[in-house]
Length: 130
Image 1 (cartoon, rainbow, N blue to C red):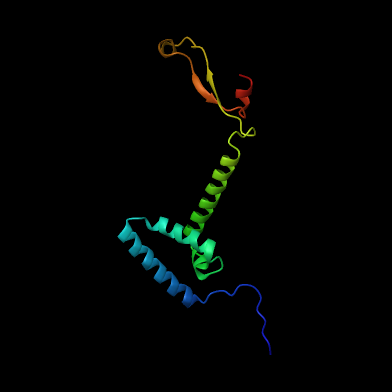
Image 2: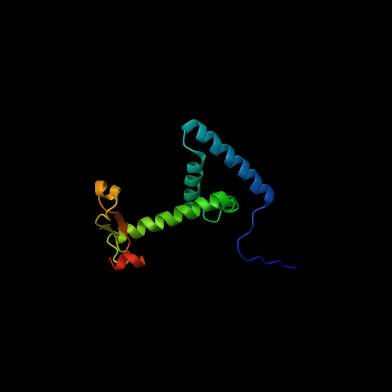
């Protein structure tokens, strides 16, 4: 009888545990030798393996750790925001806030310091009318 398997083969748990222990030890040693934080080294390893070994066991190791997965998502979102801002430096969709100054209301403090000053965002209801 022939057995066909489709898709990516899931790594063996023993293999995953071995790789996890070895990589964690290497990251800890590199961190202590170089002074670079372990999270930055994990991020560097993640970016390297995403580019060069996308379907490898290291990817599986990182995906199974919620903290590392959250850091990956945060890096991806930050990179997307940075890319958007460099491509659209003056985005007309996002209006800039403006400075609103009001005259003093007659109170003793405002006689000394002046009236209210604040930044007002155009998408706030009471800002549009001012």
